[in-house]
Image (cartoon, rainbow, N blue to C red; front, side):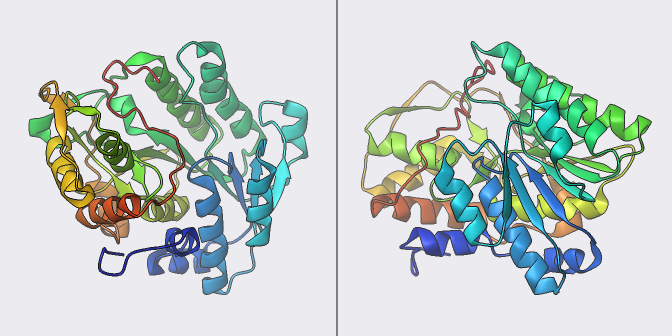
Length: 344
C-alpha cells in the first residue's frame, strides 16, 4: 500500500484490512473450535471477523465465526453475513439474551463504551465492568481475548518512549478508570475460574477512513489550528491490530496475559501534520506547545510474539494523505486522542 499504487475503492481497502498474515493462518491451523466476536459492529469488529473467516479458510480449518451485536445499522449485519460471518442480534447486557448465545471455545471481547462516556458515566461503567463479569460467567469454559486501551496507563514521559505492560496503571478520567475496571474483572475471573485470557491494550488502530492520522488530516483540510499539546502518539495499521488480537488467543493464559498492541514508532503530531500538509497542499497552523508527556505505548512484547506490523507509520501517513486528497470516504468518528483530561 503506497501512493504510487493508491487504493482507490473501499472494496480494495476492505480486502487489505482483512488479509490475514501467515502467522495468524498458522495459529488458526492449530486453534480448534468456533469463534465468537462480541461487540462485532464497532469500528474494528467487521474487519476482524472477516479476517478470522479468511484465516480459517487459508488454514483449511472449518470454523464458524459468529458476530454478536445490537446491529443498529442492519446494513452492517448483511455485509458480515455476505462474507461468511454468522450474526446474532441482541443486547449483551440482557442476561436472558446472553444465555441463548452458542458455546464457543474462542471468544473475542470487543464490547465497550468510550465516546459519549462523559455525561453518561453509569452506562460506561456498566458496559466496561459489569458486562465483562457477565461474559466471564457465561463463557467460563472459553479462552477470551479482551480489548482494552493504552489509556489505562495515563500520561507517559516522552523520554521513556512509551508505557510497558509492567508499568502501574494511572488512568485519567472515568472512561480510562472504567477500562482498568474491565481489565481487573477479566483478571479476577481468569484467576478464580482458570479462564485463559489475553488483555489487549490498544494504542491506536488506524486505517484510511478512521484514526488519529485521519483526524489530523481532516483538521488540516478544514483549515483548523492543530493543538500539539498531546505532542506524540502511536498508531498501528488496523489489519495488524486485528491479526495480533486474534493471534493472542493462542497465548491467552491464567493469570491473564497483558499485551500492548501498537506500532513501533513514536510519532510527532507536528511532524506528521507537516507531511500531511505537503501531501494535501495545505498550510498547517498549530496552537499550543508540546507537553513533556503523552499517552504512549511500548509494544515490544507483541512484536516479539508476532513481528512488526506489515504496514508502518510512514506508509500509513502517505496513504491516508492521498486517500483524503482524492476525496476518500471517512467514518466520521474522531478519536479525540488529544484529550489530556480523559473526557470522551
